[in-house]
Image 1: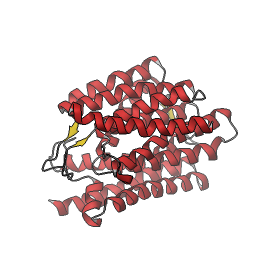
Image 2 (image 1 turned 135 degrees about the vertical axis):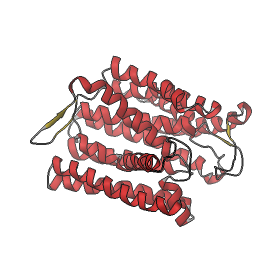
Image 3 (image 1 turned 180 degrees about the vertical axis):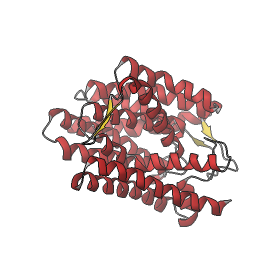
Image 4 (image 1 turned 90 degrees about the vertical axis):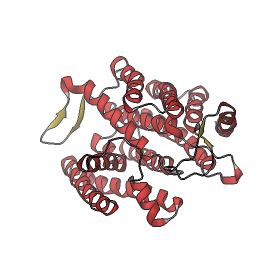
Length: 340
């Protein structure tokens, strides 16, 4: 196993390095403009590199649950959609249509659909015939919520790591004695490693060539985490409200920014500087501090939800999720007025 891990680390570094170099020859570069803060053309193929690494992980480690391996395999198609978007700047309709193809396949043909979203004591949120459309809309929602977060170096990667760490904690706490759970713990570690190594390239640590996630990466991470949440819910490893808390910051920010844009008669899904990470970056003047603050906020939100779940009930945790969102929306809206 130690030798396999060593090979996996070498694969990580090699694939990321080669993707960065090849990108210059193929002109797969993110060019500077008035909206972007980087000053020179930078490869946007980090997501493709991660998807290739994830494919290698399926070959190197044969202990993955087949459903988890399928998620990683289909992730390559999602990353291709993101690469096409980065290269040709697709409109929102075109991007969503291409995203739907692999997502619909998993939901409809591989039964990755949510039949319920939790038992809350006095009632059970059973989806019934709405199962497939609800799952499809939820996945598209979360994937594009992740896409919203990719605005400054490291922000999506660090926040995704916070979510994967929360999921690891939940798996260990809830069902550590199950064989399936032990395999899932290992799976979460294996998919987190490439994201951590990518950060070394993203920040050019040790003078490694700089590379961006691009839409291929943001869509990929959103897709993988979305279907991991569905897998956990269907296997009843973790209660759905705790799964929702693990991605609270993504959910809150995506809903808030679009509600605010609707209120201000602005276009939805447009690129802009009104995202939470841009706001915090303007205040702190530090990319590192911005990354840490947002990841910490996600962990704090989860902790509050987890405490309400453990010491009170699933229903209290659900109500708290809604209440904290309304508070988050209030402060986001208040600050957005200062920017107008």
